[in-house]
Amino acid sequence: MITHIVLFKLKDGSPESVARTVQVLRNMEGKIDELKHIEVGTDVLHSERSYHIALVTKFESMDALAAYQVHPVHKEVIAHMAEVREASVSVDYES
Figure 1 (cartoon, rainbow, N blue to C red):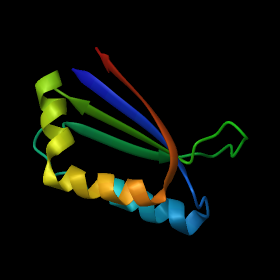
Figure 2 (figure 1 turned 90 degrees about the vertical axis):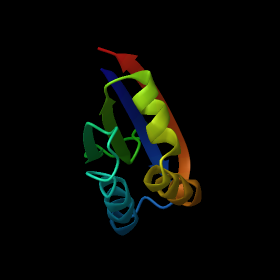
Figure 3 (figure 1 turned 90 degrees about the horizontal axis):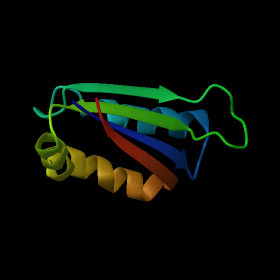
């Protein structure tokens, strides 16, 4: 199993902007066969170090993760994130 985690810091950290982007991310659920698990959470601490949104996804293999990366639904998410994202970091690990 491959776990793919991305943290997003948005240009506009208002509750409305965060909620809109959370919905865009959650919209992937059930639309990408390779995506076996999705969890989207928002920061509750709001510290200087905090990012606004955490995305946790799981895939059966590296090939499934690669297929997700080019899936049309994910491409729409990438386009949205390119507009609203200030910064992002990610980690991928095998479990």
